[in-house]
Amino acid sequence: MSEAVVLEDGAAAPGYEVRRKDDPQFVEGRRNFFDYIDLGTQEASNGKMRVQITRAKQGLVKPTGWHTHICEGQFVYMLEGWLDLAFADGTVHLEPGDSIYIPGGVPHNETGTSDTFDLIEISIPAKMETEPCDPPPGMPA
Image 1: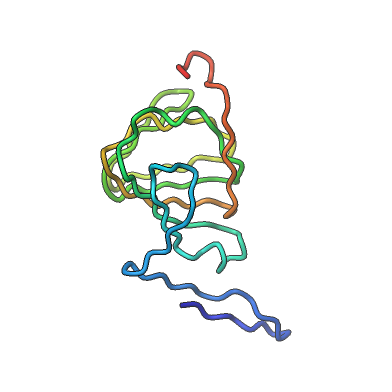
Image 2 (image 1 turned 120 degrees about the vertical axis):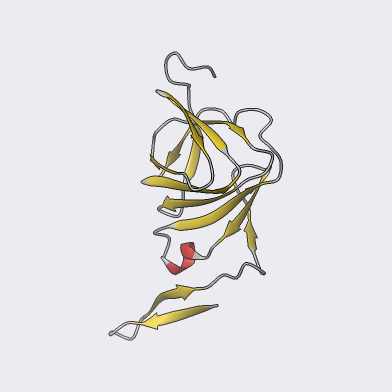
């Protein structure tokens, strides 16, 4: 459900967007072993932000590889399960209730997950590209 907002000049602007848990809106994502559920913010914000639930269909069997995101930033909040992320200065282990903000352009590598997990991911802007990169000096590929 959504509602357009009418501005003073009569133009329509995006309004609020409601998504229901019993009607998830699955979308294509970066990794085929995850399910991605769109929470409707991309359209409602005119592309300023994207909020989605990422759900693991299976545990990570090998690291995703070092990569960066072309965006202002990415925020992750763990709901269930766990996730390990490698950075130039070490690995961060996230469990339910933990969160992390990753500025755009920061190299990282998803190195491990629980067999299943759910997390909320927010990116600004909504369109976030992923580019492979070399590992930081001294870090394994």
